[in-house]
Image (cartoon, rainbow, N blue to C red; front, side, top):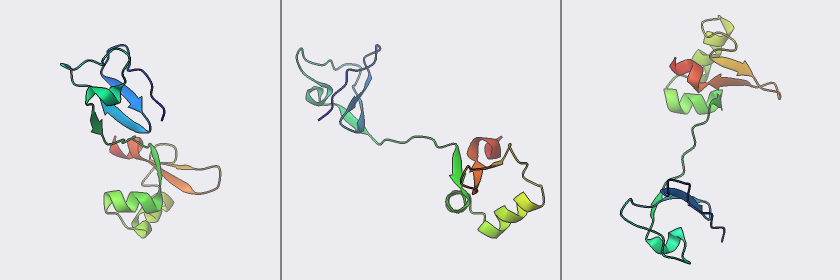
Length: 99
């Protein structure tokens, strides 16, 4: 199992593949790891900037047809709300959509 040290603030570290937070009032015992400090496991969520149209439909409620129409009609600007991926697919820029 992979165990990394916590950051210089001492509150976040990686244990295996899960993100772990050490409570402020807890410390890692000498020679121990974040696992032995009764760490609270947090779900690993990473914000993704570009998503496929199919994934965006699941999150936004727009239909695929509505998204493709907005792209085709120029309502959503290229480079701001959507981009063309190297494999030719259209990707929605979530940050651009939210601004």
